Image (cartoon, rainbow over all chains, first blue to last red; front, side):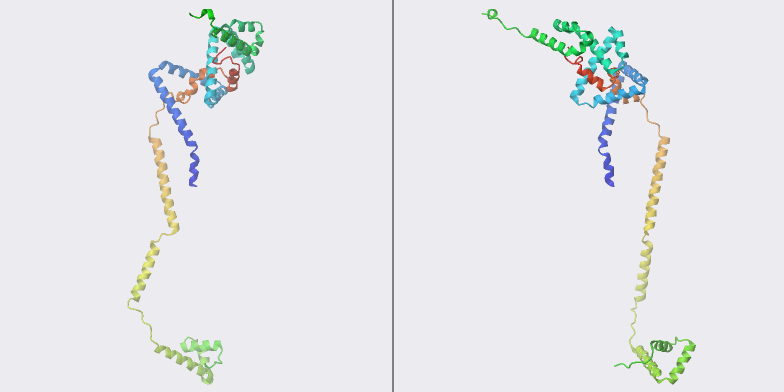
Length: 176
Length: 164
């Protein structure tokens, strides 16, 4: 019977881990109180915004937070990169093209939303493409852009590599 | 070789009782009448009486002078030990009593402590502390329904490190 109490052993590190996470958060908040009142005010606002969300959405966000943190380190880093770039792009879109931003927000079907995001993102990326790749897009209807994007991207890289590759030196150019 | 007696066991028992003076009056009188007329039973009675008379000549074992004291001491010690040895039920009752008293004291102490001690100071930002990790990233989470959507977004190769 005395071994029954050993049942707590596997749970103990979890309890300690959770305590230490809480302590770290408390410490971080103390630092913010002393050094960055503005950031602290922003976080308080964010907490209120989170609490104002419908319970289902709050649950989804908690799940996403948990899922992301349970990924292996490499995958987590990659997904965080995507998430950050997507957010920055979306926030810029809200400022520069509020109508397009609204269009994304109002599209509730995930697949439709993804398609719209792809098209808008490719429109945004066009400005950074080499002329040959941009031409490929121009000759394709907008609805098909997401499908041909991998080929457009490959073309862009090929042209870029060819341009940046050092040219062979002619014998006449050699110094005597 | 011993002479075989023709008396029955019952008659012999009665005869012994008569010689010991333990036979009831009526039976004693009947036996006396028999003794007067029956030479066989009279011979048996005389034989038994002689045997008992001889017993009086045997040396009688005398108890040692300390016999009484030793016996009384032993009896006294045994009684004292018995009195001092706790009974099993008594031991359990005692342990149970102590345990109940300790539990009661602990319970009362806990209740008193809760009632009298001031409540721990609660951080006004306690909720923020508990959700800090999530709240810090809410800016990113609010545009994504779930991890599946994020995975699809990653596959589009539109938000990779080397875009385009």
